[in-house]
Image (cartoon, rainbow, N blue to C red; front, side, top):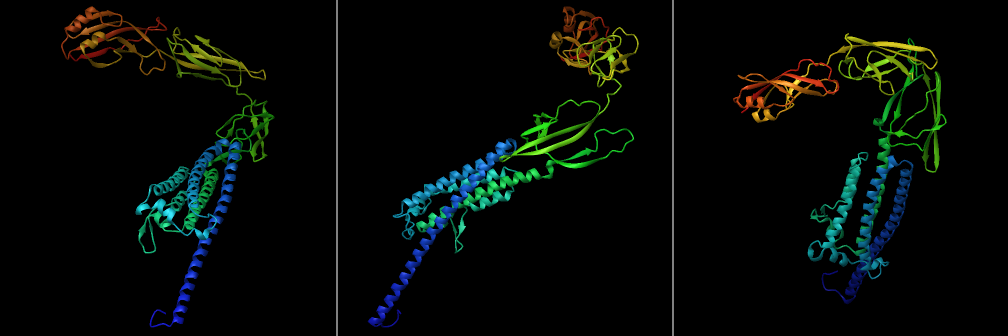
Amino acid sequence: MAGGKLSPRQKMINLMYLVFIAMMALNMSKEVLSAFGLMNEKLTASNTIATERNTAFMAGLADKVSEQPEKYTPLKEKADQISALSNEFNTYLDKVKGELLGSADDPTDYETMDKGDFLDEKFFKGGVLSGDANEFLENVKKYRDGVSSAIRSVKEVEPVVADDVEKTFSTEDVKDGDGVKKNWLQYNFEGFPLVASLTKITQMQADVKTTESKVLSALLAGQQASELSFSNYEAIVVPDKTAFFSGEKFKGRIVLGRFDATLKPTKVMVNGKEQTEVQNGQIMLDFPAGNVGERKIDGVLEFKEGDSIIPIKIASTYAVIPKPNSAVISADKMNVVYRGVQNPMTISIPGVPSVNATAPGLKKVGGAGKYVMNVTSIKSREVAIKVSGKLPNGSSVSDSKKFRIKDIPRPVGTVRGEDGSIKMSKSGMQKASIGAILPDFDFDIKLDVTSFKFKVSGQPTINVRGRRLDSRAKSALKKAKRGSTVQVMDIKAQLKTNKGYKLKKISPVIIELTN
């Protein structure tokens, strides 16, 4: 059409072709703009439905919290965190969309929204990203990283859910059709018609709603998967009966019981009495065992589920056996009793509320079978404790047990709390206190030192009264040379609680002078 000399008629025909092609292109552009507008409307309607669905999910989760707070409160807190992030980001996108629509002559006439000047000026002024552009990217990043971090902190949710969020809201550079890297914001919004950018932002809101729904579902699914995990089950042995006679065969079953520390029933009734104590998901039972023989446990567990109460029947048996006829006697400290101290004893017969215990030096000091025994004056090496009592049926039961009698072990002398061979300065020795201890002895016994002998090498032995060096001992100490030794020996001490008891000879202390 452009070559050679053309007649006026041909020129007119060619011009008409050009006008026709231009009109077709113009009409196609307007159809595309209208298509974007209709897509935006559909996405907006879909977002409204998704918001209602997510709101209903949160309301249902709140009901679960009221039914089982220990189980669902942590899940609700995480869901609230994600919902708050979604609402905040969605509100920001609404603000940007409002600015876009405000720049249009008629927000309802999509065919006139063919310019991208407003957003280009807002985000890409002067060929660089503006403050508004960076704010937009920061809001995307805040939502993406916040939701991803919240998901990854829940061990029951698969990491792929967080990966999907990071991919959906990625703002990494993008390659265009020519393979050239472009900034994500420029690739998606620079130079596009206003209605196209508006639709893209609405699509981002749809992605937010979809992500929120997907994450909330993953949280609940993760909670349910965790509850059903075999790590929450215990093997429970259920015998056919709770007591077997000698010579019988044991018969029973092994079953799996699910353990859930957060599960609490609404109400528990056992044998006509309400049980209120729950520990780690287990109902603690506490009631009289009853008379000898087989006894029944009947009751019901009640759980709230929605507006209904779900009952679970309890049915079991246990055996009450006759009381034993032998006494249980034990020394609270050791299997021996010591002279010079009050030996604490616990004496009882299982099933007998009151017993009578007799032995030399034995004295009752309180309830629950508490006694003390003083064997200081007993010359023999053992003592027998006799116990008797009456069973509930009126018959008598008695028993006896012998205990060995030992002296208090040999004490060890100390200087400034140290024993054996030690090093010390003269000034430290002058101020030191002489003591005596019973190392590795089960009784907390205090000893009072009354006197000791003090010996400096090459000088006469000095007798000292009390716990510290007197003037004579200090004078002898001053004459001692560096590296010489002094001895604290023949230490005399007595028990604070029993001054009449004679202790074994106390070990001496040898001190090497350091100056």
